[in-house]
Image (cartoon, rainbow, N blue to C red; front, side, top):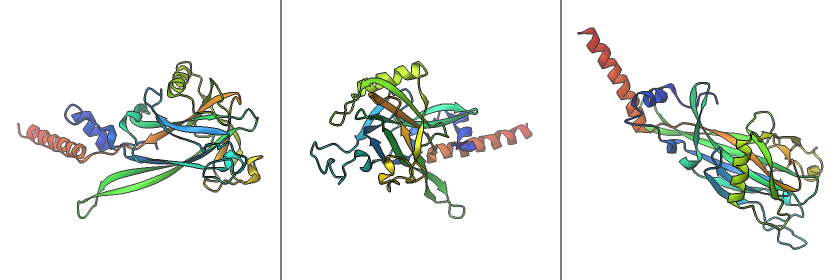
Length: 275
């Protein structure tokens, strides 16, 4: 995803930013999240420094009973219960721009606080389906249509999109609540200020060979390309962060600006020739 905005959109924004501007709300991307934890975790969305930060949901809650142990999941192990979350449209507050290769690109961030039951076998594994809707014109009719494209993003170690920190928040254990937004935001911002985010570590792939999760692995609801990512510290809450590129979608008004810009250019060129 090198150039997420077309040259024409950049041209319009450059020439007419004072009149038109770029509306981040046009980045219509939905996210479908399938995730499970050993032992527990939650999902948040926000920007890079968590100055904008929103709770999405948490994993299947322990009922405290012997069996079945977890609500809506006939299983004894928490990690067998894959939880699904859906974000229909990403709010503009959670989209921010960066200059990459001299181009303005847009990103949103998912945060996964994960905690253990004080054992040594701890992990997160996830697959996120990101769907972008592009507005285009048909060549013959000139009518507006929408084209949706989906990309699978899994837990892995190669892209650099996934990073993690170990926080100073003690693990809530099997029956504890999700750490507060205030505590998580403080930990995230401190880690960002001190450059403490590091790369993630794979414990193995979701292909039926990674112990102890190979008891039922591969986990059917998650791609076999996904990796089990290990925690840095089983005594504290660990936070995993995923950076997701967002596609820039021009509004008809922006495209009108492009057309106007080209029209002005042709007009000035014509006038110069006839002075």
